[in-house]
Length: 122
Length: 108
Image 1 (tube, each protein chain N blue to C red):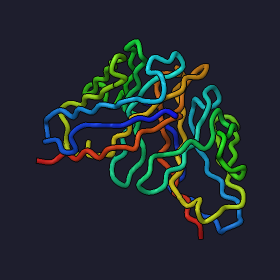
Image 2 (cartoon, rainbow over the protein chains, first blue to last red):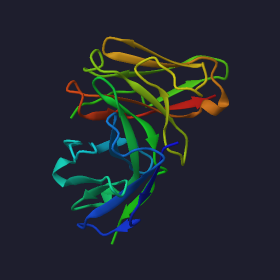
Image 3 (tube, each protein chain N blue to C red):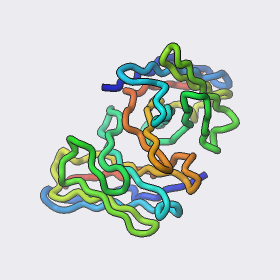
Image 4 (cartoon, rainbow over the protein chains, first blue to last red):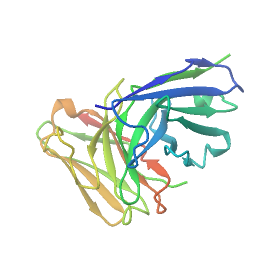
């Protein structure tokens, strides 16, 4: 059973950088069939895809966040990470890490982390 | 960026059928997926590849596709089905993920 666990600060100051790490267990982070991703959900609102990364380092980012997002993967530690720069109160959200299964074209989330609330406030 | 459109809310009485639609320009080419999310929990995959149901998902959940619209149908709605439902797909390139805005199902 694949498990994903987010870790990182729960409080970030405006204009600073949000950094989160997801640790993968129970499955290979170097799977050829999967991407790894981040999804955010502001309080009371819907899901928004932030981006996806392959074990090789190939990334795809949401165009609306692309200028502020960097994702990376460390296969030796079974971890992948998110950096979101210049945060504001609008970035306050539950951040989920996820495993995305690639099929023909497109992909879907087959495993989710439990989510971690990040609040942007001074 | 690519957009998927869902109705904000749907309601149904216990035992009735609830249908939630999701529209998007790339849906004729890309598969759609449906997730259920209950308060305080991570989403759960209900339907994949338009119509397939993962193991453990009750048969009352089904998916269908017609052109630019996909539909999640819940037959014989139960009180426990009250939740938010999200469709998800990718743009025509297959690289960029999109979620619908979500539909709140209220069981009357």
